[in-house]
Every structure is written in structure tokens, then in C-alpha cells.
Length: 328
Image (cartoon, rainbow, N blue to C red; front, top):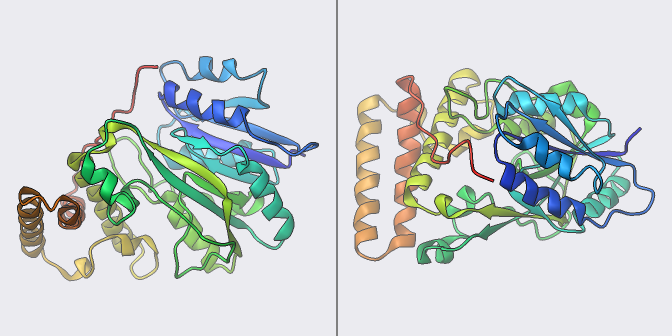
């Protein structure tokens, strides 16, 4: 049996996928390691297969298809197809540190009782970068939007603490297949919900699963210029608000992602939500105009969160800020 499967879900992002695979080809893999790189093509219409073919001679790579669009369906396909005892999840918009896989392999040996592992995610901003992005990148809300995780030591992953994010975590394959991903969560046509991996991790830990942080398992999350904007920030947090509202409706009091929404939103009427959206947006714009741009972001993010809650109630789905296709 293959010891480890590195699984990446992708859809029409050939340039980013190629960059990620270049970093995978440079990994320092301990001698004798039995591993594979599994690419799940979630309905691409372009060059995904050609990109994978370029790495056949340098990586133990294979391509599988999940034609029904949606990240949860793609993750479930990857789980079903993976041959390893452990699955290392990462994304097509990261660059793997060359010791990333080796760090996870050491952690698997040290903690055979564990089913979950999480690594470091460092934002790498691609120029041109606005000054407010540089100054606020390590503070909420940009640290959330840029998907930053920085565990300082190897320690347990706790249900009531920070948990890993989709760009960098590992799971015992048997537990992954047993619990799966909720196909009502995650990005898919016609909706902009997120949180499929957070919900899975919540269920795993709630059932008594053991998890460990692995700081040396590090990736860089590549933040393209189009993600370094106020428009993207608003849309990102609308998605988070929409996800929180959906979870509150379907799993009231029993989901971790509910905390991603604005506090107390479940008891608010639509009129109060509209008032809070306007008030937070007004405060954010005023601080921005006064030159306090990093401070303004908290208000703009809160406006987006309330907007996502209201959008969910109205049965609407916000438009994604980032195109689903790109030129290679």
C-alpha cells in the first residue's frame, strides 16, 4: 500500500497547478517512502491534463476526474481514490516547502494514535501589493482572508481552539473516508459556501479524534494581486457569513463554523441586519478616507459578514471575486 497520498483538487487553473507541482517535484522525500500525488480534476475544460502529464517523469502522479463541480465532491473523490494510509491535503495555489512531506511523515510516526494533523500556512503576497495589505497581513481580517496558520510548537489540535485549514492538513485515510465531506458545503455552482474542511474537522474532533499541529509542515499560500483588494475582502466575508447562516439553520448550536459569522446574528431580524451592514460599511469607509486603512478593514469585514447572513436568508448567492478560469 502507498504510505501517503498528497491530494489536490483543481479546476481550470493550469498555471497555479503547475507552480504547485514544481514545488512538489522539489520535495525532500525520505528514501524508501511510498507515496503518490493525486490530482482531482473537478470538471476542467482546459489544460489540467496536459499540466499533469508534464510531471509524470518527475513525480509519482496520477489524475482522476470528478465531473460534478463542487469542492466537497472533488475532495470525496480524492478520498475514495487515494491509496495511502494517510492523505495530505493541499491546494493548487500553494508552494510546498521542500521539507513539508518529511515533516508530516515524522509526525505520523510520533503520533500513531492521531487521525488529524495541521501545518503552517504563510501568505506570500505577489506584487503589486497595496501598503495596507502589507501592514495588516498578519492581523484579522486579512490573516483570515489570506488563510494564515502559524502554530509555534507541536501541540494537540483542540476542538475549542484553532483548527487546520484546507490548504495544509493531513488525515488518516480511514477516518477521512468514514466521515467524508458534506456536499452541501464548499464552493459549487450556484452557491458560495465555504467551510467543508472545517466542518469535517469539527466532526472528527467531536467524536474523540486526536489531532496534532506540525509547525515544520509548511506551505506558502500564493496571494495574487486580484485577491489584495477591498472588493475581494467584502466578497470573502460575505461567503463566510453565508456559510455561518447556512450552518446555523441546519446544525443550530452544533457546528464550529457558526463562530465565523457575526456574533448574535441568529436572533437579528432583516431590518437590524441591514442597519448593521450600513453602519459597519459607513465606519469602514470613514476610517479608510481618514487614512486609517488597516483599522477600517475590521468594519468592512463585519459588513460583509452581515451581508452574507442577509443574502442567505434571501436565498441569494454572492458572486465570487476570483474567476474560475485562468490563462496558463
